[in-house]
Length: 397
Length: 119
Image 1 (spheres, rainbow over the protein chains, first blue to last red):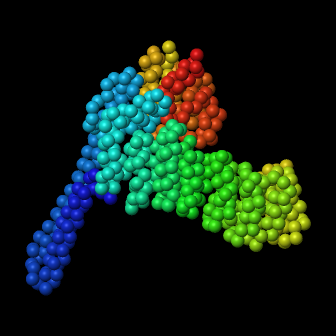
Image 2 (cartoon, rainbow over the protein chains, first blue to last red; image 1 turned 30 degrees about the vertical axis):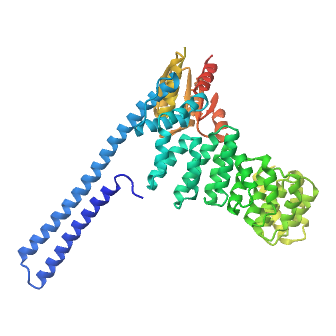
Image 3 (tube, chains in turn green, brown; image 1 turned 90 degrees about the vertical axis):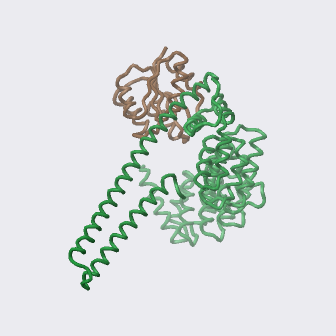
């Protein structure tokens, strides 16, 4: 991906390398000819001097170009920054007093200043900044850049859309989630999330949430990026996630990211989604569902039996998360199940069970202490003794 | 009419608030980083400070600590930040901020909160 100025720099470096290669080649040839007496000492000295002079010139050209480039960049940056500042003041006056807005096309500095205002303002002034983005032609200019075949121009447009949060741009952003370039898909996911997050609740946002869920369900975006996008949705997250889990063909990686978001955002109204996924056929999804329930700390009634059953899941990491989830279940049955899990063949599961017991308050602590003496499994006894000691070092009585 | 100090590195934020506050008849001074902010606070004469948390040369918490612990000042402070975590809000309030407003913000709301604080 070439940025502005990269081509000129590459050409200067290439010219310097070619000049240096010619100089060194000539010098090698001169030494070879001297060795077989085809060149006089004077001729060799001339070739040597020529090579040194060319090397010197190359260094001077490279140093001058680099210093000149930095100086020009600083001046240009300062000029742009002054322009942006002046435009920020002008846009602020327009927003505040209703002065007439300038007509399109606008300079990039004017666009940048208006985007900054849109980014920081909400309420009536935020709406005015949004209206200005549309009436002053900024929306059209950004969408034009979005259709460019240059990746850097597309990324530039996506970044601007992330800041502009233009609801009308969403139909143009969502198709980019299927782009070949990873970085375009990532930026498109972020731009879409920010746009949805800024939309007020209502039919438009519901429709946009459906479109977003449909666009990501096949897993075009990496799970980590998708998870981040779900968190960026803020108030719009429940709508998108409810839509996503309403779709039958969501990829396991998408369901996993969605469940993580439900847990992290503490979306209790969607706890039923996590409850339904506790028995998913994909182990990562089962683990994510249990993790989400544990994070929320509330296990819906319909998931209690399934969470207890997950303690016997064939996959080790699912049992670890099941132990943490069961730790939040009230009642003696959960305590008994965790006691039994202390004898699991996996150390990680035993540790998870012990920590879950400790997290159950005085009753769980008493069980850990009792297990350290009375549990039939020798490893369970040792683990509980260790957990008990660690817990009491952390909280001295 | 009151005198306010805005400490924020984003010219868009300071411009908007300055214009709103000046239109309401207040006097406004602007500092665009932590160092300038501390100097302006030390010079005194402000009824309230609007403080950003993330600036190029340090954190707004440093200014807050300087204000409350070193100068023992009781000047009113509103923290205006894009940080969404509850921990940041709690830390700011525990360190002596009088109010916390999240970005994006409504300038009218900030002006109203400042007016209430200095009343």
